[in-house]
Image (cartoon, rainbow, N blue to C red; front, side, top):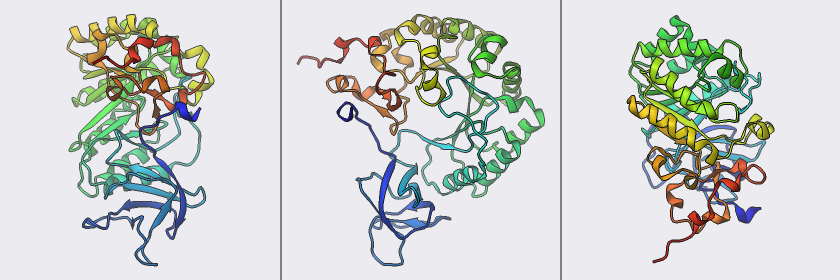
Amino acid sequence: MANDVLVERQNDFQLIETNAFDGLYVYIDREISEGEFNIPSITDIKESISEQHFKIKENHDFMHGDIIYLNNRRRKISGVLNQNARQNTLLVTEKCDNLCSFCSQPPNEKDDIHLYLVAAEAINNYRDDTVVGITGGEPTLDKEKFLKFLTLINSNNKQTPLHILTNGRSFSDKEFTKEVLKLSSKREIVWGIPVHGHNQKLHDDCVGAEGAFFETLEGLMNLSYAREFIELRTVVTQKNYKFLPHISELITSSLPFVATHAIMNLEPRGWARRNFEDLTIPPQEQMKYIDKAVSLNTIHGISSSLYNYPLCSVPSGLRRFYHKSISDWKNYYPDFCNTCVEKKDCGGFFSSSIGVYLDYSSISGDKHETKSS
């Protein structure tokens, strides 16, 4: 199977040698002025015994100022925030009050305070001004920790823009919402909030939590009063694909303050992998309903985005909504993509779809042939 995989970027590297302890570091290129950082620096060039350095098995693309994490027990170095990455996302918790059957990061009750702290330190020491994603679990489930996280990243007066993925339920608490908005008033934030059904029955069934639908809607309303930028997200499954136009009707009629509606193909990882046969629906069967949903959004001035689809599965009329969205450290291109003239514009497939989780039937072979000159 190795010959059938082309990963754009590698994010984890095998550690061969280091004199550094476990923890967060800023990668330093000695040919560049070091700059001021609040965490230790590390380099891959051993200039002295005392200087913290590492040696890894593979070639890396770390740049001066990238944030990396070193783990001696696992003999691994991981990119945390990288300037070469298409997207940077930080996990702050694995706890969640939703139990989505398609969750790619299944919840657990592990202690998460270190995740919030590492994420805050990484943001505070990252000198790039691109968007950083915050995800879970549910980042706002522990309200006190989330408020402390926002306080910590404000401590150095940096205003790194954030894309925070949350189920929105905590924002049904008006006092909590006020505190969050106060702490984030000077920071550009996109709130990515899921709506997987047009009514309580469908949405609550999708997320495995009774009452979630109305809590999410109340949270959306509370955020709207402050004119926050809201991206609604819908993961397409067998349960809801035929109701995509109805979801758009809900958005355009009851949630007109929403800035954009992201329609997302399934990532076969975690519980989505376990429940794959009951969830997956080929892209070509989705497109008729996606087209109707996108048309409704457009008529009412709400933008649409298509995430996690191979470009060849998207009809020409919908391609202006297409985004090359799969993170470059977890996407791949099968062999048949190698001659495709549109490969550079395509996000490919999730690496977790290798094998039986890749639906070849949804892809037209003639779209992968090289154009004749």
